[in-house]
Length: 398
Image 1: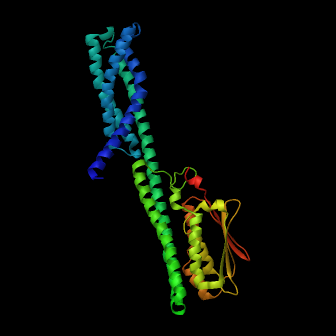
Image 2 (image 1 turned 135 degrees about the vertical axis):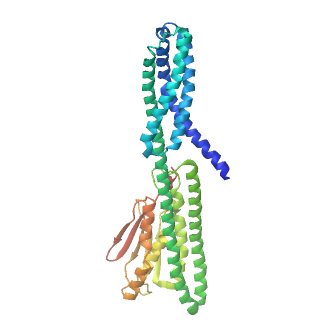
Image 3 (image 1 turned 90 degrees about the vertical axis):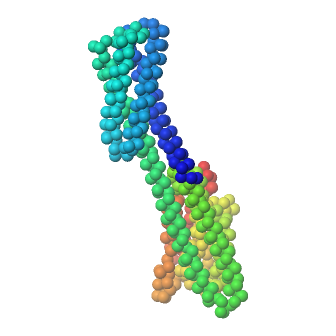
């Protein structure tokens, strides 16, 4: 879309907002202002005959509408010149001065017409003109109050929308940053494994590369989907205003762009486990017991990979002491990932683990950014267990 077209749309939206604000002021003011000001201009004759009542009301309504349009134009010009909420007092003061000046000019002409030509048997005199001006002054203050109230509400809503949009983009940026930590971390470990296999077991190295390609295909697809979602959401936000990204109770599907079905994660873990199995052999075992109804539930992508990698990194893996990793679901709709504890104890191994530690912090940060319930971690004498909340699809598409 060209810059000129965008400018036209922006002007049209701004004109529509201002017209709506003036329209509400017109609806609130005219139904009671016109009959009262007409009574002051005409006098007792206004209420004595139906024809006089209708004719005078219509005539004064037309004059008042002309005056109101000029007031509305001035109010819009002042609002554009001093748009901020911090300028409310200045804007209200300028409105009062401008409205008083305009109304004085219009009323001077209108009272002269009613005194000079006596339409509708008007009984207005120069002695009663101050009463008309006094009533109009009260109406001016009410009109300024209506304008400022509606304008302040509009600006406050706009501020909240911009605040939500900024929060949304910041959270997306943080989430993407967390994902970027996973790929280098995983690639570093995978290349180390591959380098040890190439010289010793070329066939297994070839299998390792195949599994690694499958794993990275899933990771690239996940990141690509996230990038497309972020771009689409940003455009939608600019056109329609921001909505809260991570509120699970009022969401419109944006969270689903940051989540993935458990079934897809399990398929990915199957490839990832075969990759690990190529290196560790019988020293690594995986047991998956996931109830069928929960396979379409959602969780942050790459969560299982981080947990499995965390278990492999922190524990001894030997054929005589196999590391057993269990992935299972509970009746409460949670996903449990558990492994037996047989921690590495040498200083070199401990230092290596601490230097690249990303896993659990990454998972917890993802759940926090997505406003999901926080995972629970239990470290017992025999098992390390993490319980992950699963999110039903119906909650993200409601």
